[in-house]
Image (tube, rainbow, N blue to C red):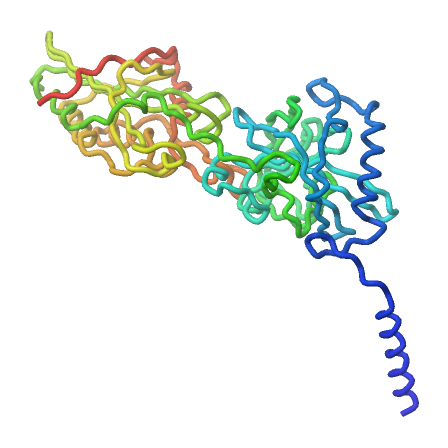
Length: 454
């Protein structure tokens, strides 16, 4: 009984002592914010780093270091928990870009090690363009894109490729990516048969950053690259508008497709014309014209980057000859063009990059014209675009085009979110056939269509 009483008295004393402690201050998001890791202390420390920044090394473009020019949104800073001591996350100005698209943003993270020393990491975040077009606002929970992690001297420390909020690949400085591809990552689990690919992007200060990206499948079971563990924070999410940093990333403009401004035409009246020339003794050819996108880009990256695939049909018999060149388009504007009702447009006089021609029989020619006369009613960027239309029209007539498939976005293996047909994929495959008699890799202008016939 005495022993029990002693225990109860001890517990009461401890509880009383705990109640006398001043309550811990809470950060904006409710996590613990101790006096030894306060926003005021971080501001003072960061100001000192900016003053001493005159001796920092230049970035990869050879321009002046950017640390002194970074504007931090201190009012919007948040304190988050992670596997170590937690961290502060703040937004900054600056817009990195990948390819032709400049919709990335920059953040800064402040950390404290076990010895109580402060450090910081600059995060440059580049969402995938197609992800932005569909999601509108990036969040860490479903982020698809790339994260680059720098120290305050603007040395690239590493990064990750994300798909649907999960790590799908790893980024390292190019000089660290050499050697056997079957190596251990910065994560706990070893990864075999990964492929390093040299790439580049433009950082938020306009400097060219050359890095290597390894595409492979693995789960995030250890610390994040660059010495930063994001924990529970929304460290990949879009900036908050009006917080002092740059505005949230906007979806990139949907490409103005080559020839899309033309009015919709009735494909049946175009295909009817071929009936005016007898089949007997006639020569019939199918030519596929490809307007290639800008190198290294895809539909969601910039104006005209999707390119276009058109189909030309020619029937000749003696002195009679008819040519019709048409293309499959979305009948919509803006972001609605990603999935919209379709239209057929006369593709006369369009600049193209590559083409491939096939001679077909009268029977197969008729099958192709029938397909074009009644096109699918819906255009979809991924599921059925201009290249799909031409591919299946040719397939109706027994023509198998070169491989038109390419990647859209990033999947859990670091590759395409979806594999789909595109002008980029078809154009690249045609270019590989350079030298064949039916292949033109010098480009040109599509011929003039005859137009509709009654």
